[in-house]
Length: 110
Figure 1 (cartoon, rainbow, N blue to C red):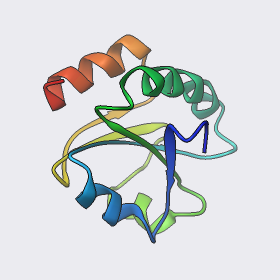
Figure 2: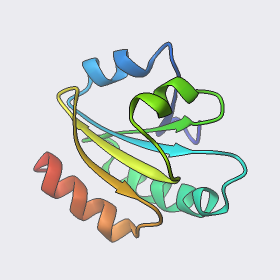
Figure 3: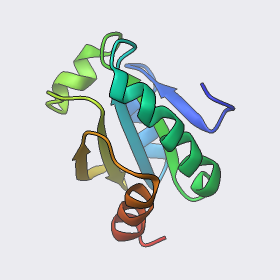
Figure 4: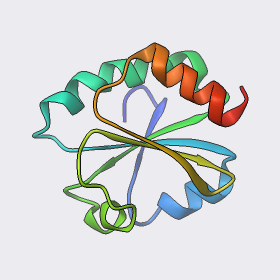
């Protein structure tokens, strides 16, 4: 977990995190994924700025394959946006910090 700003989710805490928080972004990734590693710094940058309004979290698809299967993750990195425990948007692949902020504003009205 990077600086306690981005939360590592797993089968035990995934649903609880979605239920307890109004706005959650989940980054689906893997250790072997080069674009995922590049996105990690961008995701952290946005989390530092907006982490008080939105919960930033990550799911490793290799260790949490059942969650990845449930949300039909076929390509990584994939970003899922949850509002009040409901999936409302998905973005696949590399995206800029500005695009993440734009999606947060659009989806969460923040």
